[in-house]
Every structure is written in C-alpha cells, then in structure tokens.
Image (cartoon, rainbow, N blue to C red; front, side, top):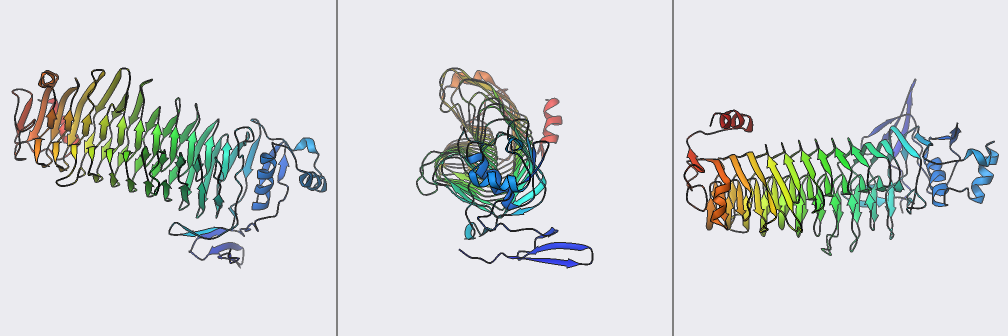
Length: 513
C-alpha cells in the first residue's frame, strides 16, 4: 500500500486550496484520513455534523455496532463533553457532511493504485443507517471498499441520502454493491453522483449500480448520475442486475432525471445504463456511455423492465451510447413486459449477433406468464441496428414481439431513420411480429439489409391473420424492399416519396395522412 497522498495544500494571501496531482482543486485544506483514526462529530440538537474522515469513521463504527457506542467511543464523547444520551441516530436525525473528505484511495483506468480499506456504513438490514444523510453538495474522494459480503459502498444499507458526490474511488463487493449505497432501504436518493469511481460486482453475485445497488419499495432516485465504470460478473457470465445509476429498482419506485456517462459491462443479463432491472417508472433520463453484455436483456436506459404483475412506464428518455450484446438488446430497453415506452429516442449503435435487437426495444413479452399489455409510441431511432449478415429478429424500433396469445398492445407514431441489418427477419420498424399487436402510423426511411424475411417496415409476421391489425405503415420507396417480407398489403404498408428527416417533421406529416 502506497503512502503517497497525491495532494498539496497551497495558501496565498486569503486563498487556501488543496491541489491534487490530477489537477483537481478543492477550496480549503482537505484532511486525508489515515485509515484508522476516529473522532467525535459535532452534535447539535441530536443532529451530527461531520467535517473529516475520522468523524465519518466514528459514524461507521457506531452504526455497525448496532447503533450503540463502543467502549472507545464512550471515552471519546466524555472527553468532548457529550453525554451518551446525546448520541442518537434515528429517522428524525440528520447527519450533515460539512466539508469535502478524502479517504485516501486512488484508482487509475479502473485499477486500484493505493488506498486503505473503508468499511461500509450499515452492513446489514438490521444494522443500517436509519438517519438522513445530507451531503450539502460536498464530495467524498478516494473511497476503497473490498467486501466478500452483501451491501457495499460508502453506505451498505441506508435511509435517505442527498446532495453527495463520490469521486475517484474503487469499490468491489458481493451482492448489492453501489458507488455510494449498496441498498436504500427507505427514504429517497437525490442529487447523488459517482464521478470516476470504479464499481465492480464480484463473480457469482447479483445487483450492482454506479450510484445505488438496489432501491427498496417506495424509494425514489432523482437527479443522480454516474461517470465511473461499472462491471458485473464479466468472467463468469452469471445472471445479475447491473445499472449505470441503479442496479435494481423494485415495485413502487421512481427513477427520474438521472444520467449515465460511464461504461457498463456485464457477463449476463439485465444490464442497463440507467437501471439494470426496473419494476415501476423511469422518467427523463439519458445515457451517453457504452454498454457491453455477453448474454441477454441489455438496454441503453434499462435492461429488463416490468413483469406479469403490474403496469410500468419509461418516458422521455434518450440514449446516444453504443449497445453491444446477445439476445434482447435495445437502444432504450432490452426486454419489456407490461410496459409503456413513450417519447424515447435512440441514436446509438445497437449490435447483436444473436436475436431480438431494436432501436428502442429488443424483445416484447419475454419471458411472461399471464396477460401482458405493452405500448410503444412516439419513439425515434437514428442509430444503426444489427450486425451485417448475422442475427435474427432485428428492427429499427422493435426487434421481436414474442409468440404469446396474451401478449398484446399498440405500436404507434414511431419513426426510424437508422440502418437495420442482419440475417433473418429484418424490418425497418419491427423485425418479427408474432402476436395480435396493433401497429399503426409508423414511418421508416432506414436502409434494410438481410438474407431472408426482409421488410421496409416489418421483416416477418408469423400469422398473416394479424395483418388485420396493421394500418398506415409508411416507408421511403427508395429503400429497395417492400413493406412486409418483401411485399405490400393494400392500404396497410405504403411506399412514399416523402423523405421525412426528423420525428418532428414526421408527426406533422402523419397527421395529414
């Protein structure tokens, strides 16, 4: 372990700053934690004020001891003039971060270069941080966590955390690992950011996120972001939930106004640049980072969204990053069930050599039991979808609509200008449609290439009786292939000369048809 601390305190006149080797400058003198020392925080009206790493360590020790003082802490608080009854943490307590903190670790290109190990605050569901943590827009720099048990991050399990940034750290853990929090058990996560902290889920585990591993029921994540690398089970290929911001969001949760710029890599499924697996709502989020997954359910916003038990919404989101993976990958979502995708846009490249890749959705309705209602509307794709000569069920908007009699919904007002390429069942709007979906008011101008079952709007429909549910599907007539599997259906698939250059232009145009 290196002792070099990579910083210098500079004072000129009234100005005091800490200058880091990488060029970062922090106001005032940043104290770097030595890896061992503890210090009593300032206690005012039962709220805690934390100014340095030693005081943060006091908090961690107290929480991890079951919200009880250790014998050493009893001596410390007596020396500071506090009573034991002053030291309380509950849902009515606020822990305030009052300064930037440096915990001393460093990483470079995703590899740990130095650091003392940090023990997460709250390592079990019982011994968790029950108080509200207010970061006051300060930064915790240089955290290093390496845990073999669940719940890893600066916090293992916590209640509300707000206005906090973690920077230039390295976190490696088992299940429920996050750049800031392993699991948020209650409350909310707001304005929390991971800047260049590497977050790694060890093999044979599940749930990791750049900011939070998992949100429990009723928790909201708002205005959070990640720019660090997040990876999960890259060598083992085991199932997992891996998200750039949130790994796993259960029922009655909301993810809103979040963004990711970091690279996300996973060995298996449910990988999303914002959320790995979501079972409620995602709104106004965007991604610019690259995501690579080896197997299935991979998306620019969410990997897997919804199930057979509810109704879910992803709206007003966009992706510009490249998405690379196997089965069920999409510019917005990999796989959806009982989900509405509304007003979303992809301009990133989506590559699958397997099956089920789409500019917006990879696969609808897989896997599913019971009734499923899915709606994709007002969406745009501008990215190239598929791999030349490889893969099946590739579409400019949706790759594959699953073969299930109870899988229904509407695909409406969608626009594609991206190139769609593959081998079999390749379509400008839908690669393959197998169910009784209503597909209407869509337009594609993207070039479509494949070996068989190619369509300017739909590559293949398994049951031609479903043609009755199709209407007002338009394509630019210079594409060189007709509407569905090389042929048109009167009044349903129509080649036009109108070269529509944007979604906004398309909406005005389709209203006059």
